[in-house]
Image 1 (spheres, rainbow, N blue to C red):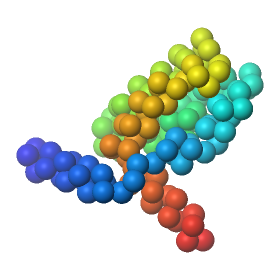
Image 2: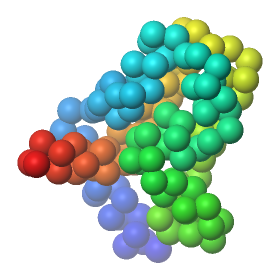
Image 3: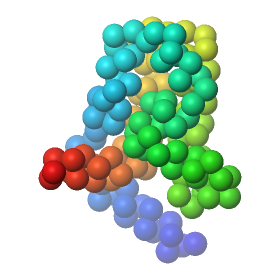
Length: 131
């Protein structure tokens, strides 16, 4: 357990040397949709489908954040905090639709992503650029 905690701190520390990603870099599609206003279909996606919501986009639309929908896999390959953020996006989309309504949630999600998952998105962006 001590070794795992050390590795987590080391990973977080080494990632902090790189600049933080913005919401536009983490979720370019949803960033654009939220800035321009979401339609009823987008609102329903945010409300009902974690694989295709903003958090799902950050994970590459794989469903990996939810452990590929197999609960025992969540602690191994997914992220409970990201699942909670997906639920918060869902709740916010049920009640409101303007970009300003999502601002504090986006800020909290971006902070979490940069602390815990920045390397995931960076490696995906690097592979796209290399093509």
